[in-house]
Length: 216
Image (cartoon, rainbow, N blue to C red):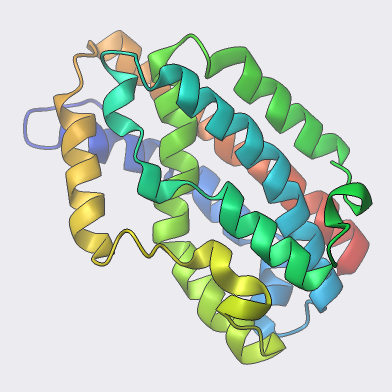
């Protein structure tokens, strides 16, 4: 898709990642979650993997906070690590840190974050966009399904999907998309960022596939 004044970079990014996004949604683990077949152990394992790649991404956010372009995308109200820690403590126990390990796909995802998110503004935004806008959109559907099928609440394992600092997600997402449109990237850099966003989805899909092989 070519960028035009009418569409803007945010729309290009959405279109460029649409098929990769759909592949992630079609994985066995997401299907099992949607249908109420994913055991709580499967959800717990998924959250554990999230902890590792969010740790990498939020380390990058601290570094990129001072970047003249990427810094505009660093919003403290998006931070997920404290919520993940609360959920894992509720689901596993106080020794949860000693009882979780990253899978092979998670290690690849974290390695890519470390490779491109600490010194390339576009790379950081590609991964940031893929993760956090997903949490604010489809993640809210997952929260409803997990509550319905597993009986989980914010206190027992669903705080990851709550953003108390963002009372109106549509307003926040619209502002985020304006940041994308206003960022000073030329067409070649926009295409490079779009490709990195597709890769981020693919790396995440690989994690879902690993989890599906264990729990579906």
